[in-house]
Image 1: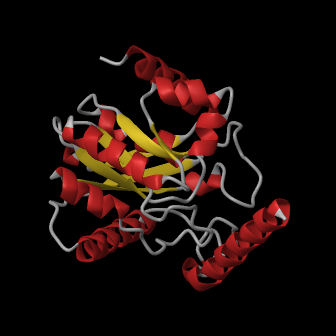
Image 2: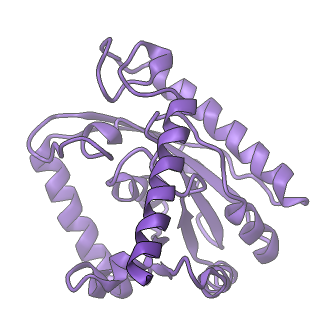
Image 3: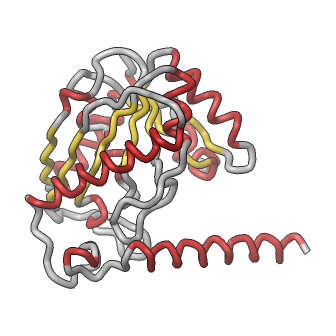
Length: 249
């Protein structure tokens, strides 16, 4: 029992109802009822983590998400994140958060990660970091892939929030647990391929208006291609480095 988490979930479900969000969840039975597992989630919008929690409630479990330090530093969200036992990720000192995650997995927790690290502007599955695979291998726990489609319509990078009563359909698919194996790069490749396949399945039953900003270029939408989005990410990262350098001079 986790009273604070349960309360937050109740609030979130009330918000979802007010927004009129229409969820379709498949594969919730793939979430382990007990024991540790890495929950790998694709990243298309800022609200992904709230939707990813829905299927794990079938076995009445909670996800401890790894989230960037800035969220914990915030006066409002920080106390909530700590109260929910999420894991703070300091990009300067990432080893500590990694070890915290492994220990949580060994204690039998579900630890949520975004293998893509940042939001996919193309809404395709980006290249993966190896952290999810390495944690699963070290802790000896499976990886459970969760793919969400439609979250980018609510709030995503570079576009206005749509937090009102939009009645947005959001599809969620949970894949079968992937048992850990070495080497980590090969496990990472299997995870990415699995999540790409889950995404394609979700998209088959979803309506995609031509030219819409939230629709991938592959489906006739207005989003950048994966290659174009990668170039934008690189340029943004370089700009951040240059800005920090200028401040330190």
